[in-house]
Length: 398
Image 1: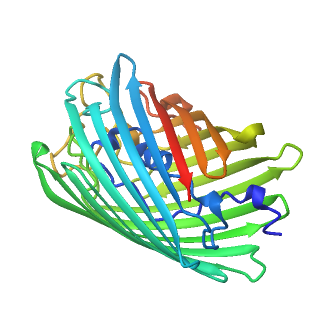
Image 2: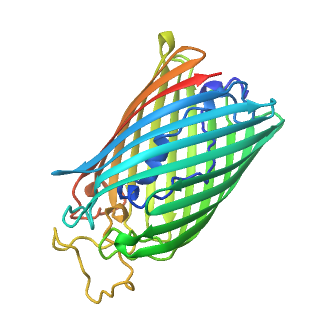
């Protein structure tokens, strides 16, 4: 049955602890590093079943161009290049490495969504990621390490992920553990050698439900301590401890009459900052003739504001609450912690002329508004936010 459901099995089992390096400047993007990290993920999962050693290797190049904006000004721009190499070893092992280099430039608000007081920034980030996987008859074990560095932020991530399948291969259980060790050093903001460390755990189950359906449920939890404030924002002082929990459910359904696959997901997230978020995702993979594939996609996101987020009172000036004590009062005017709703829509096109080559291009548009919050009243006084992502790639199998 697992083989029969191949049209619905592209649930990419990435290491749950693999995260972008928490770039202090790139973090000005309203929807965070995770979108960029996901956009730079290179295609590997379709080579084989997740618990089966790949028969072929691959090398893949990606180029990403990102730009976000608010009314009257363009904010942050990112250009990123990534190369990934994956090679099977002796039929039981594989090794995968990713090198990414990106440049970030532009300006981000010093508080809320106001350009006032914002400085121009330009930074370069380099990251390296390596994963080694050992495959067994009914499972796999992956050990990974990644590091990222830029002028004000250094991050190291260590992870181990294991999976175990039942004898009929219809059910797979997963367990992941990870450690992150970051250091923030922003002399211009008088922030020197501030550490941030976190540990993560993920439990997951993937189940083949029928010839055309496969489902997955992941539960993850993280505990971190250290410097969580944004050194480049006015009056930003956040707790030094953060607890995060997320539940992710995914369902893939193959439509044999069209030879297409729908991929649907729901994610619930909450943390000790008070943020509660719901995300719905859907995409449809439709193979066409002569090696072409088209994949339209959409995501809906809604989140509640952090408990210490302060709404604008007198824009465009920063809000200073009564009794505020610098460095002591916990508060933030970062719009990423506000209550808002967001819509992402896009399309990806792939062209595979033969078994050795794959070309792909993707466009995504992100739109965010406070009034789109579905859990109650969104945060007022925040300007509309939008972002555009373009990505092109080429992959060679060997």
